[in-house]
Length: 249
Image 1 (tube, rainbow, N blue to C red):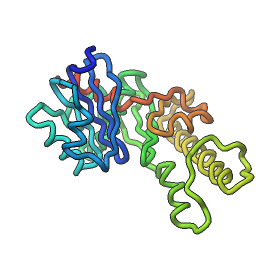
Image 2: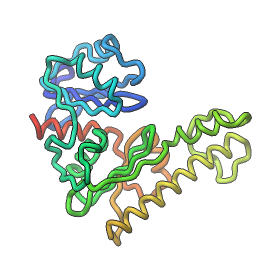
Image 3: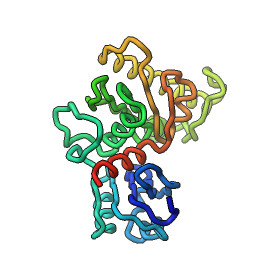
Image 4: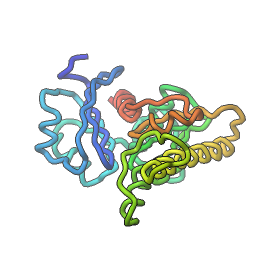
């Protein structure tokens, strides 16, 4: 695939960061990233300099910025991810139009790459669990506060607790305020993820090991201590956009 021209421009417009990448029907190029809060026509022009594409595939969970992106790309064809598009995965959900575009992209990628059943854990601003049933249908999921949201809350609401950079704690029992916060955040978060996965497995009536793939900013950190997570795929959402673009081209 050429570095400056492709079939698709993939755009994952998330709460904190927005990723863009060129893609053929089979392969994604190297992504570029910009802060979502800084998205303007000028920043988009700079981020996409030198690139050419035939169709854009947009997943947006930030409506105002999604509109800025869509307007900037006009009149190029833009596929905006929703339950109305061909996803490759079935949907068994009461109100499909309320499912986040990023969650649909993750489900499409997980189904195509790993097959059902599969659970996607996306460690973003919030952590989301998206479930593809043994029958191959997206059936729903779980949303919990993100890891940074938890630690930032402690810093903002207490006088003496610092803002910390998240990394593996040196021990389960912290010997400093920072290490105590790291232990609470990382080990506690792994406990949250483990219990949610356990309950999902029970509800799906899966008696063997539940297949789980993780993505998002803190996927590597949390997965390192969670054998329940079989694989980390950093660009899972973009893979889903590639698949959706190919199915709807």
